[in-house]
View (cartoon, helix red, strand yellow):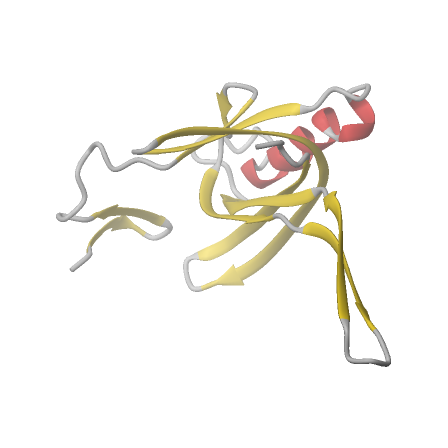
Length: 157
């Protein structure tokens, strides 16, 4: 059972008794953690294939290698900064991150993206190709949801 403590509206801490402190899943981009609340990750990789169906009921399969994959990292961010209202809203810091680090600004240099769990790290190489920001008004106030999209290069095994 999950225990949720809410000291005030908009602030939530989740403590799961069955989780150990060594149960970790971390995502780092060029050795740095993303300075935002991460709620999800999606990785899609696929091959470059073709199937040819003939009149005689033969099926030929052609493989042309692997396609560029897509890694999406998503989370939430608050619209109103805590304490100091003169600061830029935290959700907009993801926009700033994208504008500074997008593929067209890095001169062809790929990010080293490390995904790590208890079994060890896996490093992918990719380019930041998109950002999505959604802002919604909810029961706890205005909350922003974000997604960073990386196109990742297939690795040879």
